[in-house]
Length: 441
Image (cartoon, rainbow, N blue to C red; front, side, top):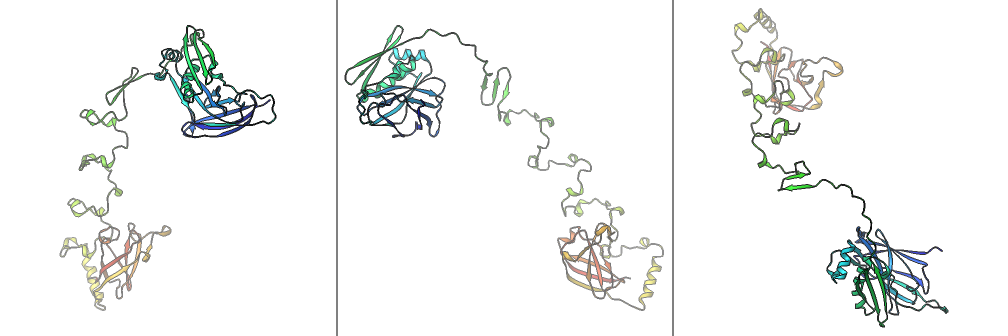
């Protein structure tokens, strides 16, 4: 016949009655209580010692149970005996769990009456739980309720330890007294109930077991020396963070010790990057910040013809009296006289304009669709309406800052009929502070 199974949780950190299960009077070995032992909600770790779990209970008529449970990991199982259910009413119970790390040490502690001070035996009492026994009416062959001590027949030192640990609890309740006495072959446990009735159980030492197999070789040991050094086995090693600044000798950190990419900007001291540290050709256009090449940064005579863009030298850029006879090309005067002759029939005048706003939408990209712009370096063109301007004028403009010195705007204009044109390397919003349309001479 299969057993009726109760599955319950029993947390050793809790208090009070944890749960109640029901059974019927005079049933025997037909029900099992399986208890998952937890510690603060987590699975309880019983360790690797020899384990004994005992159900210690008081029946409604005052008789006691001190019965063996089975232990599997953190699960304790108790099978209800006939004596467990002999009396109707509430059976108050708790578990007594005993771990013995060393059997011989436990026996010595029992013999010397020093078990309470021994660290080889660990004792744990669970919170209380209840088995409620329902009365069965008309049952003539009711079993007489007596004390039951199945846990005392376990031939192991853990049973001795459990008996000793239980003695304090049982004696304080006035129900039973448990005494232990050593014998040449083991020990004798004597139990005296409240009526003076005694029963004894002998536990004999077993024969010495065979020598076990040799264990696996342990891991290599590690020795710590001071706050920074470790020596595992025969290799000297350094703990993480062990090499502090004072441990480094002068010039110890060479180039080969520094990982690639680890000398970041904040590692460089002020003025550490000298000219000699810069590789030839390494300072490319994109490495130069805007407005950083000022006049003081340009060597004398460094701006050669190849550096000057076509149309970049406007009238405003030429100092008064700078165009000497030697600067004039052949037949240049003849061209001038031709202009003077033409001016005899029409004499345009100088014109002045100011505060002309140019928005980013006024620009047209002359290089769009692969077309060739007027100036390669300044592909964007904006048309500025200027009444009276003709091709006989030379227009020179002054832009607002920061665009005047940004390098974004060409330093040259072109003239048309009633308008002139400015050029840029991108579509920007700017202001023409002043524009002078000077009659060509």
